[in-house]
Structure formats: C-alpha cells, structure tokens
Image (cartoon, rainbow, N blue to C red; front, side):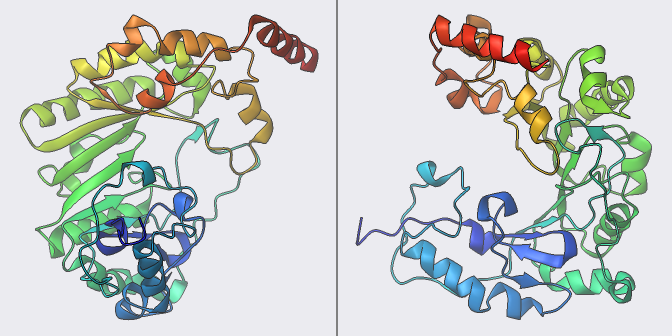
Length: 347
C-alpha cells in the first residue's frame, strides 16, 4: 500500500457551501468540521486551492484519512492515483448549497422541541451580493444540490437562489432534497427548473398516514403523495433523471419498510434507508427509537425483518443500508428479555 495512493474524487469535484458560508470538500458530517474556508471572508481561489485545501488533498494522497473520520465510502474506494499528487484542482463540478436551515416541519428525530433555528446565517451586507459571491463556484459546475440542512421550498433564500441560478447558468442541473410538501408543479415552474432536475429526493419516513404524523410534525402526508404522483410522471417523461425517497429507520416505522419498498417501485423511484444521527437536543428520544442499537428492546424484530424474504427481495431498490441491515445479527433471548425489562422500568 505504501506505493499505492487511493483516490477520492470529492475534494476535486465537490464543494459543500454550508450555513455561515463554510466550504467543505465532502459531507460536513463525515469531515467533522474541516472547512477549506468561508465564502463571505475569502475569494474562490483562496478557498478552493488554498493552504487547507492542498493539505487535505495531500493527506488523502498519502492514504491519511484522519481528517474525514466519519466517511462511509473508504471501503469502496478502489481507484488509484497515477503519478504525483494533484494539489491544485479545477473548479468543482458539483456544488451543494445549504446556506439556510429554515424548515417548515419538525421531524421528531431531526429537530427537538428546544431546537431554535437562526435563519440569519448570511451577513446582512452580503445578502444582495450572494449570487455574485457564488458565481465563481457555479461558472463551471454541472450540478447544484440544495438544500441539505433545511427545506428548499420553504426557504426564500433557497428559492431565490435557484431561480437566479437557473436564469444565469442554464447549463446547470439541480439535485433537490425536500420534504415534498411544496414540491408542486406550480412551484417547480415558478423556479424554472421543471426540465432541469438531475435528482429529486423526497423525505418520506412512513407509508401510512398515522405513522407519518407521529414522525413529521406540521407535515402534510396527502399532499406529499399527490406531489409524488406528479414527480413520478416527470420521471416517466425523463424530465427527472432520478427520483429517490429517504426513509429514516426507527422503532416507530421499521415495520413499514417492505411496503415502502413496494411503493417506491410503483412510482419508479429508489429508496435510501437511513440510520439515526444523534444530534442537537435529542439524546433521550434518540435512545428510545434507535432500533438499530442492540440494547433496544425491539432490535431482534428488526434483525428478523432484515433477514426476511420480503426485505431481501427489495434489495434492488434499496440503494443504501441493505448491506448493513443484512449484516445485523440477533442477540440471545435472555439479553433481549433483559433489555425489554429495562425499557419497561424506565417508563
């Protein structure tokens, strides 16, 4: 391995522009805070090919992944660097815009009751210059992804940016993450992106309305399904290249996974099963619904499902998570019983 250098493409092709203007070369959750710089304080060249960027690329060339401890892709990186390390990079081809955290719903595993959103994440003197600031990042980009930290259709900042980008950079295609409530034909047409969607990702954490209402406070289940029908039609017309549903697995909704998989097939979508991410002020609730924890009283039920025929036959549409789920192993009956007793005593 000493003379072989594993190649990770992200610090050469991807830039995540997140709240307060920080720039990450990959998912900020995986990088754990390693920022190349700040778009409100430094120029494009100072950030993208500056000292911190070059240090990051050098470390990866040296097979040192200590700056990205949360990476979920290390085991599947197979391509090898050929020749000397390339520390200076061309502009990114994919730009993720997550500048505004505002959201119009509160998923119980995402934003706790005490979590307050500060939507004033862009300096006042930069608001009118935002597109100019972003232009060097977008001139050579093929794809813009939005919004990974809030709801794109609820955020005026995100909506205005998408409309402006669609006008100024007609070659760009969009990858959108949304809760689906306001992802209507009218809104897509207002933003001028109905025929510019590379991927549409809709978070739908339940297939039954009752379960959805438990998980998504302030949501609109029926409107989301109606909008998904429209998105499915766009997919059939090849106006959306990829339609994907996100499903965060909890003890509340895990029994609906097989039915959810069948629904994604029906609408021509893919499904991404996600594990819980304990963050913000949610530790108590996280422990109560984190069924993937071996200490959870329903853990063995999830294991049984993961090894069931219904679940395994859905692998063709599960694009993340099925290797993990099929690798789950049951715990002994006595241990399972003990966990259930502990859970009852906490009530």
